[in-house]
Length: 414
Image (tube, helix red, strand yellow):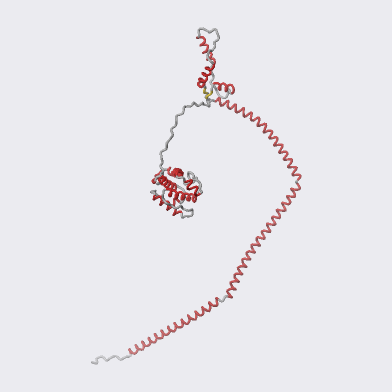
C-alpha cells in the first residue's frame, strides 16, 4: 500500500529508494487487475496491456513519453471516475499542463499529498507517476469496498518418508555384473578369501562331531524367496570412488589414449583419401584452366585491345566533358552579365520616359519661388526696421546736440 509520506529526499530514504517505484508499479498493476481495467479501459480504447514496469523510468528500458503520458491520463481519469468523482476523459491533443493540474486537484481532494512540481508527470513515467496512479487506485478500491485480507496458507500433510535409491548404491548382483564386464572402471573393495577360508576352518575344527550324512535343507522355497526379498535392501553395497586416486586418472588417461589412437587411425585414412581426391581435382582444374586459356587466347587479346580503346575513349570523353563544363560556366557568366545590362537599360529607358522627375522639378521650382517671395518680404521688414532704428538714433543725436548748445544761467543774479 502506498503512503503519503513515503517520498522525501534521497539521502533520507536510503539507496534502495530508487527502485521503490518498481515495487509500486507491480502493486499498481495488481490493483488495476482487481478493478478490471483490461475490459473497461484497454478494450474500450484498443490498447495493449501494461507490462510490470510500464510507468517505471529506467535508462535500460525503452520509453515513449507521448504514449506513456496519454496512457497515464486515460487511466487516471478512469480511476477518478471509479472513485466516485466525475472527471472528463482527456483527449490526445488537450493541453498537458491543464490535464495534469486537474488530476492533481482531484488527488488533493482525496487527501493525497502533492509535494512535487506538476512537470514531473509530463514525462509519462517515473516515481511520481506511479505514486499518483497508485493513490487513485487505492481510492477506487475503497469506493468498491475492497479490503485486503491476510493470506491463508493450506496445511500440508506429512508424507511418508521414501527411501531414495542412490546411483552409487548397487545390489550385489549388479556389482558382480559390472565386475565381469568392466573390471577397470573403478576400484573395488577386495574380499580377503584366505582370511575367510581360515575362519571357516576354525569353525569346522570347533565342531566335535562331523555328520556322516549329507545335510539337506528343510526350508520351503517360497519362504526362502520371501526372506531373500526382505533382506535384499540390507545387502546393498556402496562403492565410493575416490576422485583423488591417481590410479583412476592413469587408467582414464590410458583409455582416452587408446580411443584417440583408434580414432586417429580411422580419421587419418579418411584424410589421406580426401587429400588424394583434392590433389587429383586440383590437377584436373589446372589442366582444364590451361586448355581454356589456350583456346581463348585470341579472345583475351581482343578483349584487352577493346579495353585499351575503351580507356582511350573515356579519356577523350573526360577531356571533352571538361571543355564543355568550362564553356558552360563561361556561358552562364556571360548570360548573367547580359541580364544585368538588360536590367540597367530597362531602368534607364523607364527613367527617360517617366515624367515623374519633371513634375518633381516643377514642384521644387514653385516651392523655391514661394520661399524667395517669403525671403523678400522678410528682407523688406528687416530693412524697414533698420531704417526706423537709424532715424530714431539720428533724432536722438540731434536732440542731444541742441541740449548742449543752450546758454548757462547767470550766477548770482539775485
